[in-house]
Length: 54
Image 1 (tube, rainbow, N blue to C red):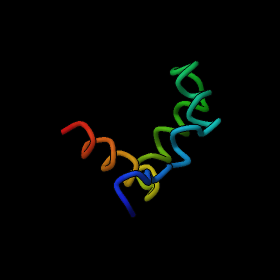
Image 2 (image 1 turned 60 degrees about the vertical axis):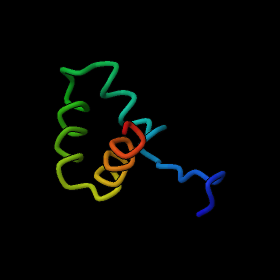
Image 3 (image 1 turned 30 degrees about the horizontal axis):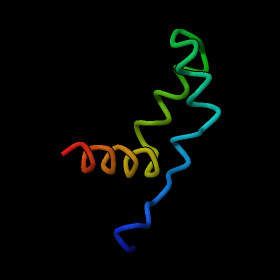
């Protein structure tokens, strides 16, 4: 991947994530948090965010 090319992650615009963030105490939010414990896409996205923060 070139320096100008950025990888996109579906987690950035995920409708399920948006709903969970809007209502953090909802069932959807609980399912979202559970989902993030094993989702390889979410883990890759979190790693990407950590890398760009440094």
